[in-house]
Length: 411
View (tube, rainbow, N blue to C red):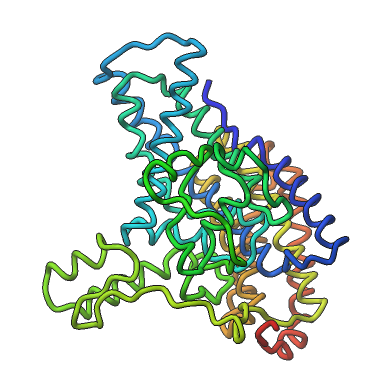
């Protein structure tokens, strides 16, 4: 039976995030900001939701090659598991490295690097579209003859392993730094410092970076994010903004070859007409500021409530979707994504927010009322329905607070 280990690990993720948050708050380290953390977690929820519509297709691709073209039939032994673990990690390295060296792949992977913070919520900041191509890199394992369920298990382990290395609370790990991927190594990977860019692509084992010349030790302070900050909490825009930039560059390019190169060349490449390759700038430490905003307590509380609703709806969908009709899945997924989009808009005080939020609340109340009699949704639908009705009234009175929100950069 195919088990979704990532979904099952969600409660553990939140427990560990809570522990790190409490520790950093006690130590006054300032590693968390509420807007950034909600944006990160929104990406993780969205990635799991959009993944529901692709999992079967992607698993089918690996399974088809295994069943029809495999070269060997490998026994289920400890040695086969060990070899497959190494194989998964090896191909993950190349998938990850290519995601930094090819613009079309970077357009999806960039989402994971957008946060200007570095904490455990960043581990859950995942692209909604990356899995649509990442599976291709692992097809040689199917061709060799590694069982699909074994592959899915170890691929999930490789992903789960990388959760804990997204922390600043763990410094050096001694001799383990020579073998495995550690928080120190992965902090480098998330750095925008020119010497850190495109380094340390490892999943579980750092040996691949050392073998193929992409290793960099953590030295000076790491500045996190991407070289041109996203400056937005919008989860949808986070997934498409780089595609928009590539498309704009391609339109400005004269020749067909340059238009194609825009998508297959590394990030920073531009046609000669547009100035040629642009190297990442040095960090201006004196004027460095993170994208931020000030909010009233009422706005923060409203956003938290709506985010919890989205989290509850998304988590329920992950566990219940095998028993649901496609219409119910699409409605639940749309409700979850729109609620996350609303949270981002609230954090930015977007001018279109008012009409969007009233529309979202109205449509969600109607949809939840229609689904309230479905046994599997009954208790959850009624609870969320009540919250959304209250939210409509709450949002009406919140408008005065929103009018006074002014964006100000953090110091």
